Length: 258
Image 1 (cartoon, rainbow, N blue to C red):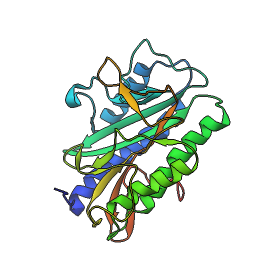
Image 2: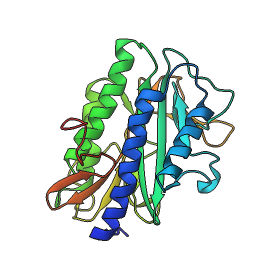
Image 3: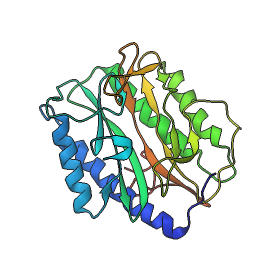
Image 4: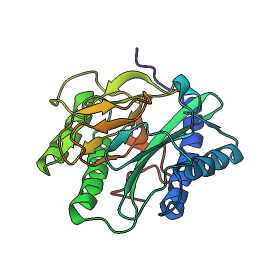
């Protein structure tokens, strides 16, 4: 069942989303070569708790950390470690969430560490653009699959692969609610979007095959062919006036505002 959020509920999710927007701004400047993924995790947890929120992922279904840190061919759910240092030329996906008074917000971004080849930078750019195009579809009366199709159309036109094994989701009092939001599919299908719906839209895109496998830690998902992967995510509220990006201080996607 798809739960519509009240203005009060949206206000709490917006509060959490703005905390995450500040975390993402911090990560863009603080993450650098030589850091361990555990250092990133500790920095983010301290920031979230200082702002009066609770990390959403720590302990969720047994996940041991605040941030999913996924490097290079790792698609999602990488576990932070004191023994894993990021290097020049890496790309790292950072997936995180927080809880404010029982309501969740969720986001992700992928960072290039130093200089990367043009095609790798294009992978990041196209993944982010796919998210922005999906957000543009979040208007009342449009079909949910239009959101999915916007990602697939843009990503595959640029020669990249769209991961099928993981999808976006509704979000609210639970981290994962109905509906599922795939990043692929034909337009014009699924439920109509309504004001009060809140979606976590999260394209995961690869430089090769879309197929993934799970490592022995039972969390980290990697590309089967070893190709690089990128991941971006925002929490979006459908309103009568169009999409509001709850995980942006401006309420808008990156194409219109930072």
